[in-house]
Length: 281
Image 1 (cartoon, rainbow, N blue to C red):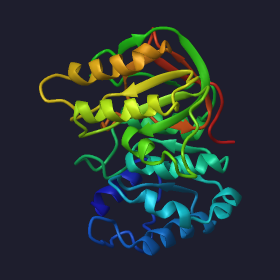
Image 2 (tube, rainbow, N blue to C red):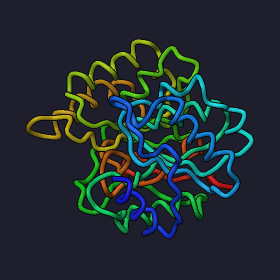
Image 3 (cartoon, rainbow, N blue to C red):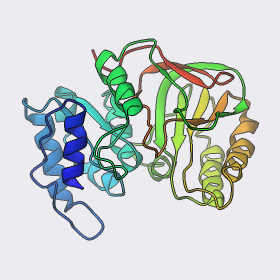
């Protein structure tokens, strides 16, 4: 997996340097907490490291949050890319006013490189990174489903639904009011997605949300994707805010890259997210 990740990173035109403990294992984690934390601090403190790309998701990021040197992250902000479980670090970084990027991880899938579509989107977001970059569905994907039409503007926040719910009640919980919330997940049964969305709604977390953009919830249904779309439509559609399902922000090879915390406009009727400010300055 590490070799495949390095090859995929080189294919992007980057020079990969693995963290000192990248190959470690500890039960269901990629190394002990102190090992993973050491690699994270090394990456942000070493001036020769220009960016940080998560190799893959899984579980374990939330365990590190109380121990991260957030002043170090704030003093040395870098392009940081990941998704899924990495949503926990991104949410916490945003509380420190540090923008990160949800996007491709080089060990996702079996191919030793990103698709051309994903690579182009990566560089559009972290290279040019400016207003006008658009995010919609990937080529070959079915047309997105408009759950509630309309337009909304606000900062982009969100990511993996299960991870966002796990942050509720902690100091690193994402603030969702007046923001465009992106949601995605993988391997969660429809009733579990329903439960998590219901918890967010009943707890008041979705009050004054500007809009919702969902990725495709892969492996979250048995027979038809319509099973999960209907759950999302029932739970979120009643909120009366622009909502669309099926953008390329989920667990898929053709994945878009978007900046956590930057302003954007959601055009639900045309299923497009348009960035209004850069993630990199």
